[in-house]
Image (tube, rainbow, N blue to C red; front, side, top):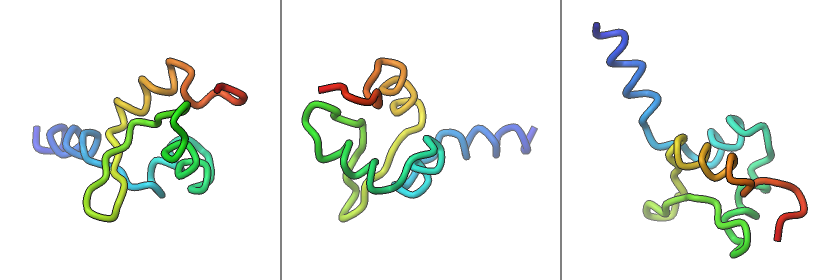
Length: 72
């Protein structure tokens, strides 16, 4: 039971720019570009000086076409 709970906690944790870039298989520069672009509006949350992400929010954004090339 503890192993399953631990896995669920890891899945629900906040991810860094580096981690979300690795998850999406893109460069960190691409993540920052998506964050700075009004038309892309990647779902990120500023925590102090750092950006943090919830995996499920990013998954929904990608499925809605937010990361598609050429989208304006």
